[in-house]
Length: 402
Image (cartoon, rainbow, N blue to C red; front, side, top):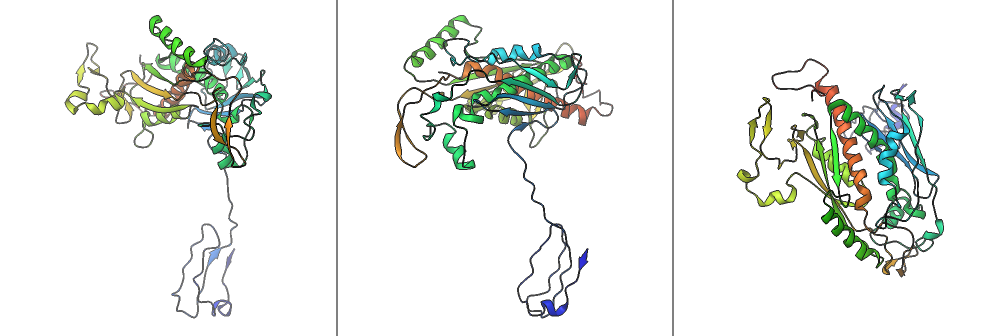
């Protein structure tokens, strides 16, 4: 509906009119004019607020849900291709690698992390519809967190959650707990399976799950030394992805390395990311750092070195993708610390509860899962854009041609 105000209704007004509707096109006369008209559509403005921060990916989308001491945790996976063989056992293998209570250097919380697929499959294959995975919490001890109900743990999310939301889940840290990563690992298990089926892609990481027994023992000893004092240490995880197809990543804002960085820095306790030569590359000259190209025996364009980490210009080049993720020392420790209460009083805190003396060992499958989710999402984006029509076979290779 269009309205035209009568001249006498606006003749005495000298102030500029302001838009009163979304999508309106308004023309104003000079402020000195004694007569002005405003024409606009009468359309009610609507404010839409979207829940943010809980969904990852654009094509292969994963939304995680649940809290450390709630009824359970899990994920909803949207965009999964149909007819992919999938059972709960496929997901359980990865969840078992992440679960607590497996050794003296992890949290003593005893969770079986048994998953259940409630939708999105039929007779052992995916249907293309959303896949809902739930993992019940079975070993919550709320009394462990009485001390922190009104006290902020240093370097934890307690204070910032209060600053942002004005309320927080006290037990277990709520959504900021590492238990949130259960849903990521379940979704990552499916992504890893599809990537392996489609292009033979494999992802490996290690820290303490180290293939070198000598170094593994040194890592365990270092964790043990701080564990017995109630303290914690950090660690660095190296992740390697083999057989990554060329062409993944979309400049300029969705470069493959930027998507990987976002994914890794979203993991609880992560605080650093580097790909390829990373910060050490700044000590080299261009002639030392550049990855020279050559033709291999199969007639493929390759690089003699891989300081780029398998990504150039934000796009995978067919070489191994490798990067590192740094994890800070676990902030929840059994050592007395100075802090502040919710009532703005200076206090001392001696945290209790069951915490990892080093989060890195159990973060390994989380890093792998987030890498798989990035690569799966980028693979689907690439196929949708660049393989819709015939390829330029002189320059391009179809995905899955391994």
